[in-house]
Image 1: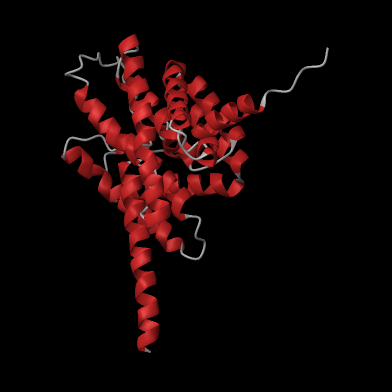
Image 2 (image 1 turned 30 degrees about the vertical axis):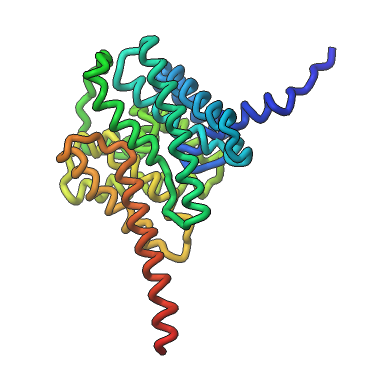
Length: 303
């Protein structure tokens, strides 16, 4: 018996969901998203439900609000919801109450992202990146106590030592830490997903993770956090964004250094860094490039 092809809206829905996972790493590639989904299933299966729920609610909110179809299918209204689902599932015990919170937060992330996307396109604002996830994540973590959410009982982390094993694995952990996975096998699955999206994509992520690891070590950041990949995660994302401009490789190095130096500041003010160093570092570098671009034509006119 011949199988009937999937209806177009079903294919569109599935593709949008997978693109939502790949957009965490700024890619539009369903195959990449599928491998990232597999990485979560391998590294932390208890987080899978929250990630899927968050991505689906972010997508559904955008559909119901009739946002641009191209953006929906590209997964732009899914990745913040996925990250929020992962964050809340990592920090709090699973419950029906937590599921409702993921639903509310993911829907709100799409509502926040829409005007930001319009501002980027119509007013030339800096890209939003994961700012809805970071802002809502800070708010929800602060409300965890008043909302009487039970903190999750995470196993004690194994001590890590610089050497031939833990140092190279820190590069892999850093890429996995973008989606809250600290197991090297899960990180390797994410790297495979990035290679599927493009070999340059994977190499930039590896380069960013390695550079952040080296810089964080050189400036004396806490070694357990460095080897755990907590600095490399932002380095990988910064390299993926700024590495697109091959004519200015210094931008990548400057951005990663800024990310490393900014990250301890969030601990000083009592906020988890998450991907905030990535956002701020990219904003600063892009703003500097715009100022330099504005200054150069003026200088030519004077000459």
